[in-house]
Length: 378
Image (spheres, rainbow, N blue to C red):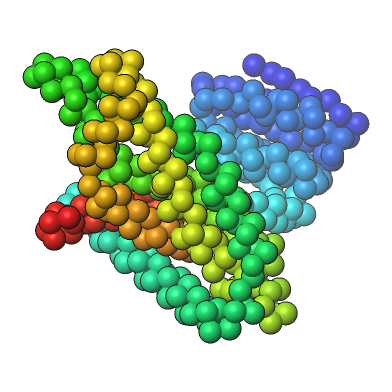
């Protein structure tokens, strides 16, 4: 095969013999020759390739870049490519371009075996420990700043507090009420299907009341708030950190704990019990409606059975969890926001991890509450 790329002052000739390709560059080659030479070099695929530059009088950096890039591409494909015959200024330009081009980092093979598995577990445990330490630091900062706000009420930013109450509380009412209503409907429908087998349909009221008032109402509300609010806190604080607004606040003498953390967490502490009560009412309403449709239990009978068979302690058990859930969600969201780096990828990663961590913390705390109330007999 013989192919030539003519130019005003130079040429590239390709010759193939016994599976080996020899590319000869001759004359003075520059940027005006690059399109034709690149087109020919792109057709080089398999087999060893030798670039003979002994006839070349002069090349510029564009031709050197094309040659070096082609050699790397062929070597990466598992074939051999070399440059021969370069002398004087031609060799110097090739060396300069090759030194200037970045080399791909070699990926170390991933370790395998028991020791590698044990190492990954150790890294995960160490990372969890670091996260718990950071959580404790942000929690302590919130408690100290809240105590200072109680002693010095002028430091409380009531405008920010009201704005966050609206964002985390008022705007969450529709989704919380709808979710709780549907949960009540599902409980009534599934409970009636099971209790009907034993002729105990009336106890579906107790099932709905205890499940919603004690566990599901506040738990699912906290999970929804964790998804909405933890991500919002992380995104807001993380964006401020990326734009160096938090550093600017410190430079102006504004404490980020007072300005960013206390209003957000305190708004959650105030609004989550209210959202929990709304969820309880909506869940009971959904359960009563489905009981009326499915079992013929009238609203009056449902209310009577609810008041007779449900103790007020169930409401207490559910609502007392709300402030703890609120502190967990708020502190985790603020902690993740403060941990954001200078990249958008860091912001997205921290936002996702904040939601996961907040939901996990809420479920873990609910399990611990259940064990505690069971042990004390409530």
